[in-house]
Image (cartoon, rainbow, N blue to C red; front, side, top):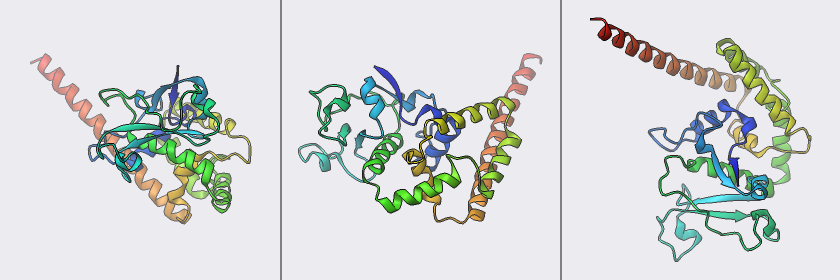
Length: 250
């Protein structure tokens, strides 16, 4: 088996953190994933299925925000938790790595969900496969236009440039180098102009109709909140450390 990332490794930490923060459904934030290599961004798959995930293969977790398990199988209790394999190319059973397996096969899940991917990541993979197979031509053309200006070809808009300036100012040299490597890897993996990365499309969709100046305001506000959370966390650590030192030397 392969250890397969649901959100590709080339996307990096900031990408998966932003994606899960924006789509979190847990008031406590337990479905937010901060690191791309977090165990909750991975599942074990055979190598063939690994190469098809998010394109021809996805997993439908039920119940979810839109449907119950009974909507898929009327003989099943509505609240029974299931993870169902969906093959988007039914005439290609090889995509599941075993010709005896078919679309609708139940994906084996652990008894506890502590280290299991949150539903929003399975939803992302499923949405990626849906866009890959069913996105209309007009939508594809719009997303390609945004891609050329917004993400895959580098930062070209004024709003994105300002956002990157904020990141550069506060990031350490090592962090910047890591992010640059991840961006280069992501570009290399999607060098074909006709290739759409549907994870990027999912990130772009909420912003397509937002004017650039409003985008800049949104990004600056989000980054300010993030910086404040980090500052507060550092202050708590320093205070805790100072108390320990004071107790150690009465």
